[in-house]
Image 1 (tube, helix red, strand yellow):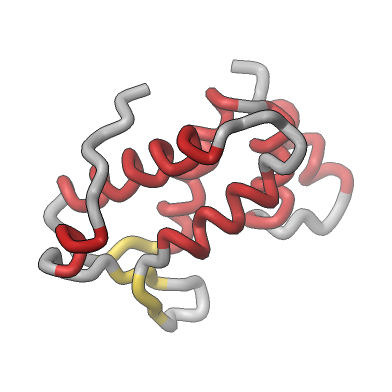
Image 2 (tube, helix red, strand yellow; image 1 turned 30 degrees about the vertical axis):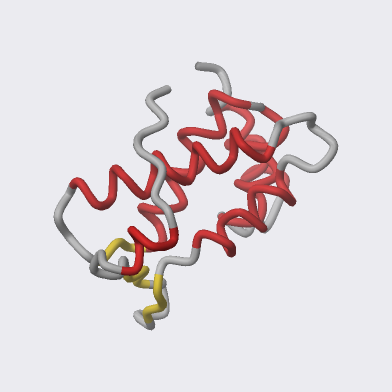
Length: 118
């Protein structure tokens, strides 16, 4: 996995903000801390170092900035996270997917498990 460049707070200040467009059509600034909290919850007790999660976020942010667009749909962002988590830890992938996709029943959970069969 290419981890991309790390950005300092100072460097981020001068970049145009990334905006996340939610399903409700509302928008909010891309929030690294919010994404980190979600990843920390998904990886709790999985032995994944926070630096690995920071690298995952760095990679996503770099990919988004390389598109030269300042907006991303929340669904695209969620899929980017899931794609990377699948390669890191199966349990974290399922935990994140269950919250992100808001599983309503066991079949939705089974479908997510099936996607782990690379």
